[in-house]
Figure (cartoon, rainbow, N blue to C red):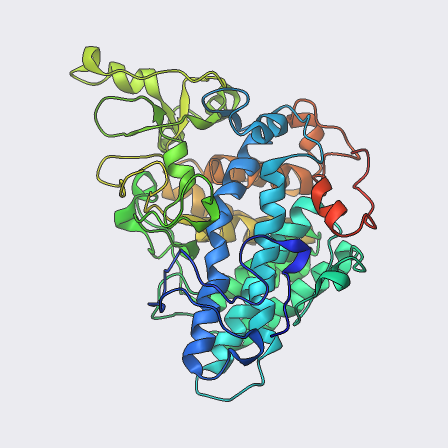
Length: 493
């Protein structure tokens, strides 16, 4: 059997997808086994199994949630100490460099997802069966999803389509200009949206709405405002989505896959992996790690006090906005309001303390998985929700000049849901109002850093941010070395 290594010598996943492990979300798999990669696709179930493997790498989305908040003005790293996930602390202070475990995980896990998707598409013509077009469309959506993460983080990245690479080929691969990567993402999402249905019987699978919403976001990140507006309008006008009526309960397990869900990363309360393989987990690591350190009391569960919201974020909310307390838990105020407040205890980690906790993604009693429950939260990650679509569409219409009235309509739908007064601004003031609303509505969800970068506001909002450097993260040095040293590093790293 001809042997391949996955792109960039990934130690997980394997480009050939010969071993399936962990994160069995969508169907039952046979026991672990090894099989000739070139002869794997022999029936429909093989394609379904391979597609499950491609979805598995979405597990790493908890890292997007951490970095998107901690690298911004929304949160600090927290944790047991400043050497606990040291890479997150470096990003908090904008002192990160090319030796960073967390950034390497982002790079490796997303390329593993690309590789698994490419494996399916490489063998797309092996046989025909009913439903194959849907499998190929989902694989194409996933490839676009993973490449979008990579280009957001690192800018120019090697682009590989519909093939696996041997070890020698990897060392000859160049970084691809991000405009070309974006063009491939656009093509993949357009293809997927043309085939997928608006609904799917299997929760967590990609839909037409997910493909179009992600395509609209991709356009917005490139300042293609007219294209973003028309694409996002299609999602809105489809009538398939609506804001969930109670923001304070939106992030509970009981209300997952609601009308507001455009694309969720599905988690279960099972373990699957461990601290040595967080990408192997079944549960959402972010939720357990963001729990309150050594907490003993009602409602919540103990955890590791990661990703702690800042005073600046808390103060950004009007006191009458129900999203403040639903997003940012003021722990001492919560304890003081309890009838047994004197018996409630918790500890402060050495990695920093703000007094605030991420109330959207936090360990709660009744939503705790199997031991070790820091690793087994069943809380889904809301990768794209309808409120985000409305606010992206509002921004796109406003910045395209295609209608502030439409933009205001979308913006005020989001505000109406939480009983906040309507906004009636226009022009550049409306742009600022939409950006501010994105912070209020979406904080704690991993979008803030990338919003600040794409809107040009990062330098004024993030302490230590250096223009011309921190818009992207460094390519992990070990990946440059494994690729033969022929990639240039991002500027100023």
